[in-house]
Image 1: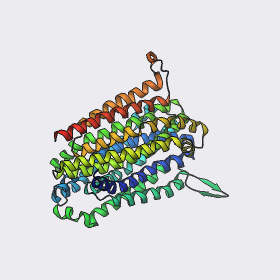
Image 2: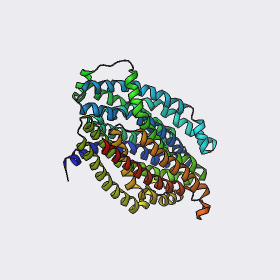
Image 3: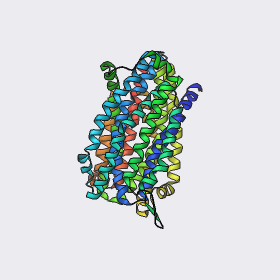
Image 4: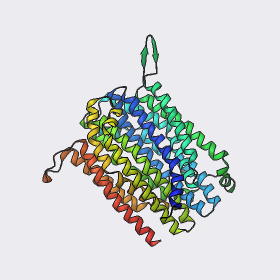
Length: 452
């Protein structure tokens, strides 16, 4: 077995993993801090975060087109092309942020699906409006994330994300809670709005830090020298959108198969919704491992393919599958072993804990398949193959996962003797969708590599 691909991949992936865990840790902090506030705030967080995360990740997926584009330019040693793409990222981010903010500022048509009580709906609207103010900064940081990944320089991502999460851990409790000690009130007691405000403030800080790294670091000096900041380049933006839009839609399809569950599960009551939120948060956190391996795989496959080193590109993809598969298998066993403790950490409410424990079995069950489909999708992005994976994701996660989950949750399958399963129906369908996506994407990757 060749050791070099595994070593290169691990060196590139571990800072991304820590950065991703730190980022998802902000969601965990929100769940814990807001969950200790009251159930209404937690329900508003569940629905609001589902909408925001679905939109933000879809737009971030488009921005991620910078990663394979810059990786291929680096593989060809074309600093001018890489630098030009780096500068065009500014215009891409502004365009996407404008679109996203229109949705976040007018979210009524999305919230309506959840059929929330009026006071919870008001909390959700406020949460989304505050996050709309932070979306340009969040996308700007994702652009820096993609540029750094394409260059193979991921360590700054780790430190910046750790700083952001540490700041959120300190700031969010102050803004969310209000504790009266004697005659002194500690904290502002803003509830779920406080969690959004903390995220917004820190998003602008970390975006500014990323811009500073691009402008001052010697790593990016060849790109800054070879190219100059320019007005929007229609050809470059069309290329980024051609590659990035299917990527963004794939992100959107995959994530909404999970986050939009919250909107439908909200009809089952606050306790069920809160239990789902705990499990969804754990699932997202565990997903950061194959996601980091996939990100590194896309960068290294892109660099190798850009340089015309096809056997090396195949070796990188193979290493990604092995590392992600072994790691995800271990995580699946840990999730099952410590399911009671994890549910307790998510909520002090015994009813919420009971729902979460029941759903964790499905999360543990699909880890290996999720690792396979994630690495395959990212390796295909390294080859600039993004449209066919979108079709596979649509079929798997919307038709099987979301639509099938709705049927299992509320109608069951009477012809097969399956009664309505409630929230478990969505997670059972998610397991089937992940298996289908893994089979489709791995097969497609094999076909692409064989025919290059």
